[in-house]
Length: 240
Image: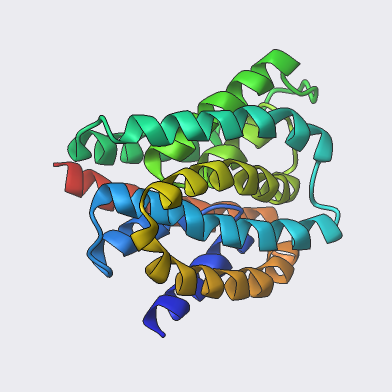
């Protein structure tokens, strides 16, 4: 029951913000369920995948998904996630914690940078490279990438925040699937714990999608920022 209720909370946050499921799931699996970091990163991806698929379907029905951008960024992000999950096993935990915190702060800060007047999206090659890089970080850090995807879609693809949130859920479903599959195939002992959390995440995502569409951009950005900075602080403390 604890695992299921934890999943509900993770799925709700993810569906509303287009991020946060994995970024919270990894610390929760570390602290609450006492998993080692390598297992927590893989388990977090599996939980995020369940929430992302559910949220993506809801956002797509509400027409908050840019399919052109999703199809451009998605395939390289899936490839990058597999590479990132392999790299994770070779890096000390302290380094992973520190990188987790730094990347999270930088990605969140980018949401507040002044936007150029040019509404055109970045060149296709830049979006493809961004997808690959985000995928590597997704697999390496064990997160779905939403805290990185949303700022990238706003800054590079020039999507409005609500549309960036919806599109990010599709991209996260794609990238987290490959990374989660790699981890669970290598360590099937995680499945009994991950399954009830993932089931709760599906329920939470179903509840969160309608709420996301009703929130204005200001509170959405504020909620995104507060959650990101709290988690970054916790990860920095662990690194130190």
